[in-house]
Length: 259
Image (cartoon, rainbow, N blue to C red; front, side, top):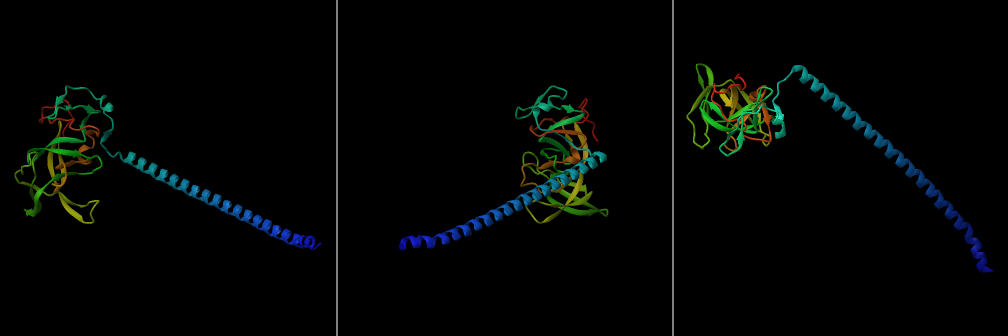
């Protein structure tokens, strides 16, 4: 009888505990539902923010494209596959010193060149290997022992460069057109560099172009050819090199006209 009485006494206590636990489970379910609702709302807000950002970027890019199209900024043409160059008029090909086939082909009236070309610069009347960089706005020339001085009240510069055999050229003296400030990506120092005009010939094309002068002895190529030379007259096949062997002025029957 005592055992039965004990079981009867514990019955209400167990039921109360079960009710408490069920109440806690219901509260946890409600809390979980609220958390999930907040997560969904946050996700939707983030997605909407990203959509708005992308739409803004598209709008800004479209406006910039339209602006460039209206200004008709001349840019060099890039070819990323040798197959594209096959559309160019075919001419007899010469052989470079390394045996690579070269040509002075044109595409839409523009001379086809590679990512590296041997060019002629005067002064100092030398042929130098040049890196072609469509991402560079201006061209640059290796200048050693650079000295600036005044002549008849105007700024001039005196320097020499190094030919393909590593021999120094004779001194070059040129008037300074202007100065530019250059900051390298790996440095916080801003350099002030002079700019001069020199005659450059690439393949059959000759022009008087501006070159920024700096010591390029730590770089592979003594000359960098940028868009100021390439625009309107050159097509660049970035997968090839030395496509345009030098042709003396006046010997190119139908090459791009010098400017």
